[in-house]
Amino acid sequence: MAHLHTLLQEAKAEKEAVKHQAIAETQAIRETIRAEGNLCAEEFRKQAVSRERDIHILKVRATHVAFGAHGGGQEQYAAVQESYSARISNLQARLTKLRSRYKALESRRNLDMEGFSRDITTLKRHIVKLENLYYGTKLTTDEIRLLRIDESNTLHGPDLESEIGQLQVLDQVLACVQVLSCCCCGGGCRGDIQRWLQTS
Image 1 (cartoon, one colour):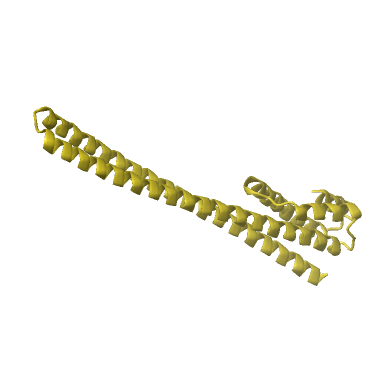
Image 2 (cartoon, one colour):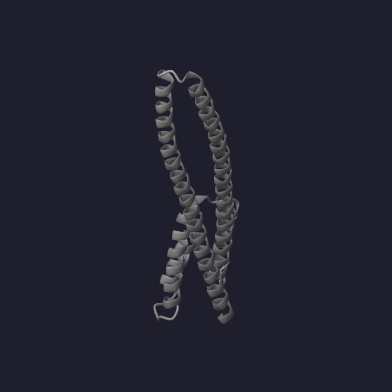
């Protein structure tokens, strides 16, 4: 019995570790995406200021052309056009790079979430089995079927957060079960809680 209690505590500790790791990874990804967004916004602000400056230069040069400096004005206009083309190419290359990095981050986030969901499903299965061993009961056919369904399901983003919340509730109920097992209230209430756990 003491060994089963130790295994139960280890499973709960592993569950907490996976939960904290999932939260930390999700927060890190969000911070990275936010930083990338701020970088893009700052770059666009700089480009807007640069475009305003170029427009002012073009207006001044257009005025010079209107007053007869046709040859020099055309050369200056061609130089500005060349500068624009180079800047546009540079911006396109940077935008492509940023999109590629964002897709890589999103792909990594999805893979991490799927891994966390599998870990949580495995820990949930262990907790249910340990809980049944703790009370000397066996898994029914329906319980085994439900566990297999859980194992075949892969959770994503919001579903994973919901699963973490359910595991937190399960953790609290298991703590209550341990307290009730030391009381003199008989096996009735423990049986009710046990059945609730198996159907949750």
